[in-house]
Image (cartoon, rainbow, N blue to C red; front, top):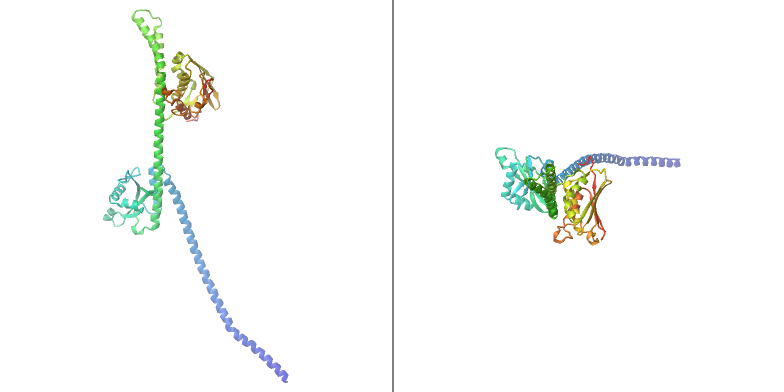
Length: 463
């Protein structure tokens, strides 16, 4: 019995221990529940914060993307400012860009004239209001300060303030090119002075710098155009000088050629005055007068001033050669020089200028004559050679030494001493190049010289 009581007591003791354990664990369990609720609340709070942060980040990303898109658009537009070829294009493109930054009533670029003593508008139709403001700020020393400090300033429009309640301002931005001030950019705007941000000023400065590059590009292009016009004018003058030189070299022969029909006419006039009968006198007079007319007409056409622009038309190259030969034939006969013409049949018209090509052919004829002091033969051959026409001028002279051959097309190189100008073959080469053709020489000492010219044929769709 006692043993059973002992065992029962132990059982009761174990049950008490479990209750005690439950009682002791209950507070910890409740604490765990509270902690879990707190954790869940904290987690919910964290999720909410993260959600808000994510929304803000998305908004910021959209703003960043929008800003990037605007910057890319402005960069593309700014390229149009820096690469514009006309002053008005620069001004208008810059105004459009400026409107992306601040509201613009009107704007203009003013460049220093000479020693920065005055400002000239870049626009073809400048604003009187902006011109007055630019001159006023120049006299007041504001422009000098802006250029010296390389800073943008915002100045109130005092005239507007007197009669209106709203404010207007002038923004003066320096135009700086390689650390040198070349002018200013003036903007008339309704934006209040206190509303201008550093970003606004920085963007306007960047745009003005792009405009300065555009101004330099325009000035450089204008200088190149002027230089090209001067070169064309000088080239035309050189061609004209070479023409006159050629006429001078042919003067004796031309005078003799004119003298012959004049002598015939004078002789028949003397016979008529003496009462001698003149059979067929009308035909004779008509033939000699026509001969004189042809000579003078050829000379006038050849000697007329060279145009700065070479106009190319369809023409018969053989006709141009015949006209050139007609000018020199009489003189060449007196020098025991024969001219042979070998023209292929059915030749297509070439793309050329008759007056210019005649000068080339006359120069080649004169050079051949000068090379054959004891007489000789010049053979001029014309044949079709795809994709154009080939012309050869061959003489039976002594030829050109190899050391000289490479120099004959260079300006001012001559083997004629004081008699030569050194322009003949150089101008021939230039003229043929303008005709999109080629000229070359083949010569051996003692075996004569042959110049070969290739000219493109005329095509209907050519301008």
